[in-house]
Image 1 (cartoon, rainbow, N blue to C red):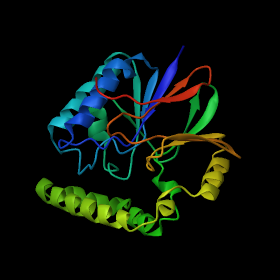
Image 2 (image 1 turned 120 degrees about the vertical axis):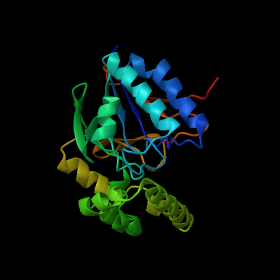
Image 3 (image 1 turned 90 degrees about the vertical axis):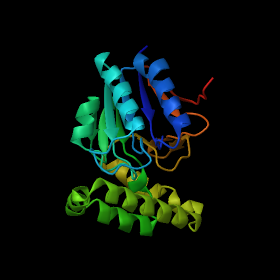
Length: 239
C-alpha cells in the first residue's frame, strides 16, 4: 500500500530538543516508508535566513537528505514563522519549495495544500502584518541585515506575537468557513489540508473535506493518506 505523510507546526528550535527528537524518530521510523512527505509550514519556530546556522538546522538537513537518498520526495509550504526559508536551504535538503496554495494529485484526488494562516481572515491584525512581511522588498532588506540583528528582531516579533495571541478570541484565530469554501471552489477541489490552527481534525464539510494538521508537543501529529483513499492521524511520543 502506497502512502503519503503530511506534517506541520513542529516549531523546531535549539531550545526544544524534545521536538527535534520527535522529528528524527518520525523520519527514521515512518517517513522512510512513504512515497512523499509534505511539510506544511512552521517546521521551525522562526527562520531568519538561509545563512543561519544551528545544531537543529544541521539535524533537519541530515534527516531530509536521508529521505532524498532513499528516493522519497519532500515538499515544503512556508508557514507564518518560517516564510523566509529559501532556495539555498531547500537545495541543501533536496526539498522542493511550493507556493502558498498548491494543488496536488493525491492518489487521484485533486487536493489543495496550504499552511492555513491565509484562511484565518477574521484575524484582521494578523492579515495586515502578513501582507507587510510578505512584501519582497521588505524581505530583501531584512535579509541584508547582520545575522545577530535579525535574531534580535525575530525575538521581539515572537514576544509581541505571543502577547497579541493572549488578547484574541479563539474564534478569530480559526479559519473562516465561508472563505475556505470560496478557496476550494476557486481551485476546484473537494479536499484541503492545512495546519496553523493546531486543531488536529478531519472535518466533513459541504464542499468535501477539510483536514487540519496538529502541532507537535508531547506527541507528534502525523497525517497518513493511503493510496486506497484512507486518511488517518497518528500521534506518537518518544519511548
